[in-house]
Image (cartoon, rainbow over all chains, first blue to last red):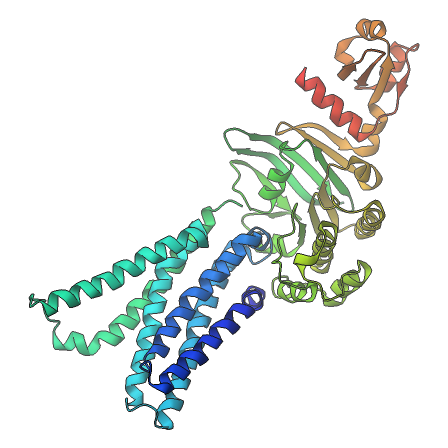
Length: 214
Length: 286
């Protein structure tokens, strides 16, 4: 497992460096007032979705999984390694995002309360976790290339629904309101759904991988 | 002497191709050579041992352990070189070592370094910059450094020049000096197997066509070189295959000693593994 995590980090070093440049550039835009600071949260999602997908794509290209499945790690180790790596990417980018926002808050570059910024990063991390939970089984079954199409469809469905609901609301359509207790508990509920979905996704991927032939 | 590998009635049906009722045993301290044409079932057999594909029937045990029930334990004891090198292009040998040290519990970094130096792989080159031979050497170094008891090699010596091949074959011979070690090697280069293998299994169309101790096979089989007239008067049941040419005929004799007693006037030469493979294949086609 340790070896698989190290492998993912080494083979994606260049891509991670490029994404870090994006963080600096977007951070600069935030300081300059071009973007809102919440864009940092979006970057967490970008990191959490693109890095695991690239990792699967590189494994597909070299057919690494055929070799890894022949090592003591086996099929279970490969799947567990990929899920652990995804978690690690989301965790590290979430922490980095929080740290950046904390710095901005402390030096007075943003007027938003720090708690609000924390909620933004936590929400983005939860959404990313849930999206990865949906995408990872497809990636492991069909490969990263085919899963790209599925990821695009997922984005269109999710963001299309949000835009549709927004449009309906602004046109005066009556949209049922959530009870207050649910609105209050929503961050926790959503966090639990994300974590539960990720665990369920791992079990599904393991089932898929156990049937895979190399 | 304990068996390192036992395959019993292994069957895998792909529809268009079937690996059919394959059984073989590799005793400890020996090398088993797996030969056969392309698509004969060599890689399928190896994939079944490594649980890379699901078998339909049969059992496989490595050092007495079932390869499915005790998969992790089996793989901890097994070093693997597959038919192509599957390390990522951007990796350097040292990084490959670091990755594999996290996967194999018995990984020996000093031994890996020893083989990297021996094979001239200590530079800064990445896998992408390696020739096929260098990639195979890296895979072989990694397989040894995992400190396995069983080595499984699928076409591991192909792409290597004769000098390096000879060096590697010497390493294989040194490896099996320990009675607890064994090697299963599939290869098209039958001359390599003639040098190092103790046992040979020839797979043909998914079935075991010939299997046994190499020396015994080479001693039992013979190559008859004769005229067409002579060939026609020979009992055809004594032959495993034949090649009829314009100027003469050749045939594979199943038991050259018995044949020589029955036809003392005909000359039967010693055979090579390639002869056994080619004639048996041709005999089956006829």
